[in-house]
Length: 100
Image (tube, rainbow, N blue to C red; front, side, top):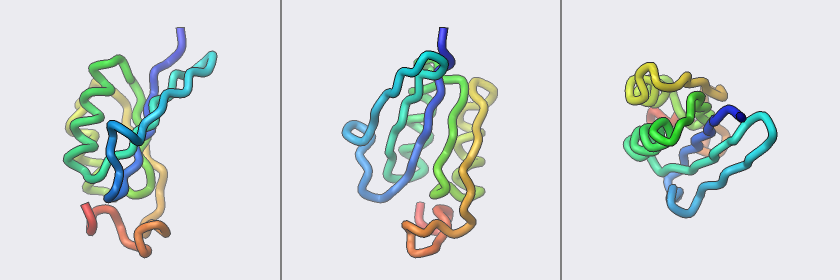
């Protein structure tokens, strides 16, 4: 049985109904989902956990506040990790905390 994990990336124009994919490898079933803001990220994270995801990695667009929000939302149902850029190059070198 493979581990269910997810990668959530945030950008203003994302639509999680369209910008998603599942990569099923022998060891990890990875869901990749794009969301447009932190509110939507919380919603998607809870849905993923309900589907059995036990590890969620957040893109560098999530600042400290965004990461904390997702961690609080999933409580102890999934581990939350992050890719880190203090200032994201795709967001004009701003933190997601300033944008979302």
